[in-house]
Length: 287
Ligand SMILES: [Zn+2]
Image 1 (tube, rainbow, N blue to C red):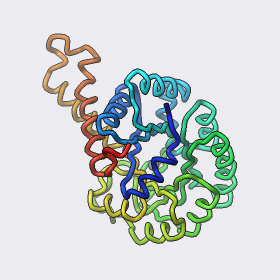
Image 2 (cartoon, rainbow, N blue to C red):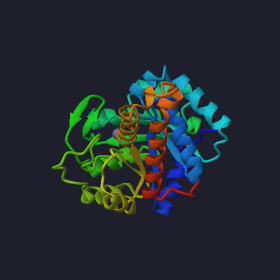
Image 3 (cartoon, helix red, strand yellow):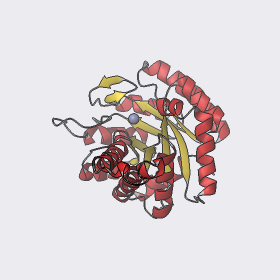
C-alpha cells in the first residue's frame, strides 16, 4: 500500500533523521529501491520526475507497477510515490493517477502566483490525504532543463508558503542538482537556520543530495531537514557497474547478453547506493 509522506517525515523530523527520496526510471530501479528499503527496514519515497513519468509510459503505468511490486515483493515498510518537481498540470495528473504525494514546483512563478497555485493543490491533497511539497527559491543545477546557480530562498517567502498548509518545504540553501562543481561554496546553514526559525516544525527537503559531504548532510538534518533527494548518484552507480560488465566482455560470454544478466550489476549498484544513503540519513530500522 502506498502512504502519504506526512507521517514518515514528521517522525523523521522528531527523531532527527531523514527519509531518502530516490528517483525511479524503470522496473530495475524501482525493484532495487523497494527491496533495499525492506531489507533496511526503512521508510522510503520513490520520486518520479515528469520526464521519467513520460518515459515509463505515463503516471498510471507507474502507479500500477509500484503497487504491483509492493504486493508481489511483500514490501511492508512505508512507501510514498511522489511526483518530483511537478508542474501544476502534472501535479493534478498524478493526484488523479493515484500517487500518494506530489511536489508542486512553483519556484519560477512570482511568489503571488506560487501561493495561488499551491493553495489550490493544498485543498485537493487535503481532501485525498496526500502529502504536498512546495518549493521556494529555485534550486540550482539542471532542473527541468533550466540551469541555475545555488540560490538561497527568502525565509519570509518560505513562511508564506508553509502557512498555506503544505506538508514539506524545499528551500534553496545553496544546493544544486546533478554533480557539484569543484568551486561549490557549500550549503548555507545560515539560510537553513533562518528558514527553520520561520517555518517551525515543518519538515524541510534537501534537493540535490548527490555529492554533498556527509558532515554537511548530518548538520542539515540537525537543522530540520527530514527528506533528502537522491537521483544522480544512483544513475552514476548504475552506469559505472554496467560499463564494467561490458568492458570486461561479460556480455559476450555465454548468456551474458540476457538483459536479466546485463542489467544485474547496475541493479546491485543501485541497491548498494540506496543502502549507503539510508545509513547516512539515519533511516534504517525507522519503518
Ligand atoms: Zn530537485
